[in-house]
Image 1 (spheres, one colour):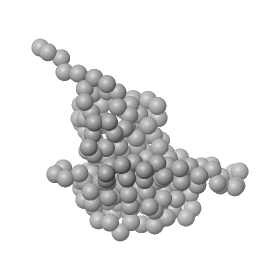
Image 2 (tube, one colour):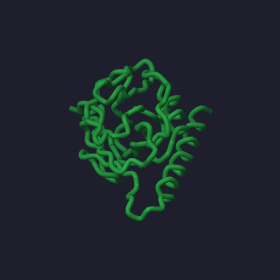
Image 3 (tube, one colour):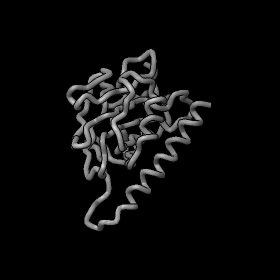
Image 4 (cartoon, one colour):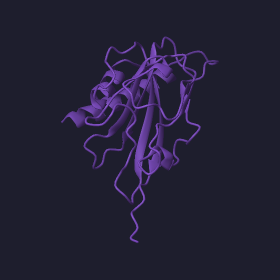
Amino acid sequence: MRRRHFVQTLGVSALVGNAGCIGQSDDTTSTFDVSSPAFSSGGELPSRFTCDGNGVSPPFVIERVPEPTAALAVTAEYDGGVFSQPVFWTLWNVPPETERIPAGLPREPALDTLGGARQGTQPPNEPGYEPPCPPAGQPYEHRFQVYALGEKLSIEGETEQEEASETIANALIASTRITVDYTHPAETES
């Protein structure tokens, strides 16, 4: 039941985020945009960011943050499927003037290198980016969503991923998404 609520929350946040971007009336103002120097939306997630590689968090470049953004946040999730917990990363309270989120963030509840940003956890794992490791042999969609938030969040680092995701969605001004596929290779017999 909790998972169903989460999916509905993200659906609403995506709608609201897109509506916020479309609603800008100044033709010279571009919309909120996020990209990654490591992959493109619609492409493949490099193994470096999965359990088949180093399992490090990916980098992002953030442009045209809308006003009045108080903080930025990131969520990462699987397409669902067989996973009981599709969210594998939450990051929030990134300062709004941040232009780059570097790859390989440490697995800590608070990140001094990102202005005290916080990361969620999926117990019993450490806080931070949990490298995706889907079942072998078929592609799974992974969504990295970056949010402009109207307020800094009062939740602490190590908050469970689902609760952090819901809190992020409730403070939303705008959002943008990068969607990539990843196929965990099938094991070969020796």
